[in-house]
Length: 134
Image (tube, rainbow, N blue to C red; front, top):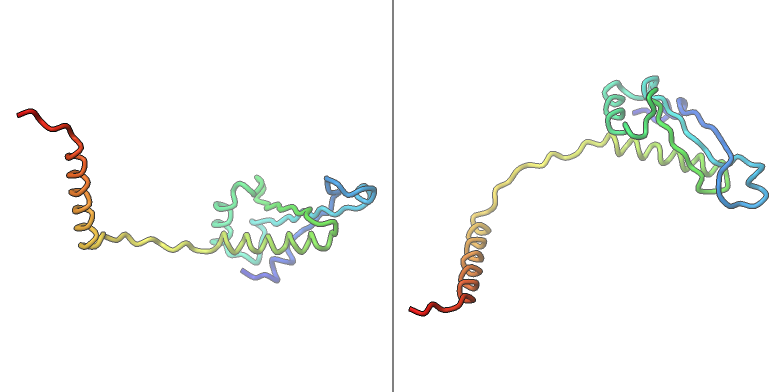
């Protein structure tokens, strides 16, 4: 993954943000939308592209364009920085390989301890029964 190449491939669009903000909110476009085409990316290998398509399927459009939006602050520049950071964090977490879990057997001591506990509990419950009249 080449960050510099990917940064050049990003497209941004600024639109008016919703929510409170007074008179200023009607004049300034502070909400930033980030668009990134997975298929046309030079900074990603084909293997990385296929992994991202699978893992980010809910966030990708039919044309394989990833769209992220940020309107946390009232500044367009800060929102742009935030959405870029979030984008790269998303890419890194999606491309990170998960560790494969190795199956293990319980130790001999834990097996013995479990059987002793079961025996103790069964005796405890057997003593709760009403005595027979024989």
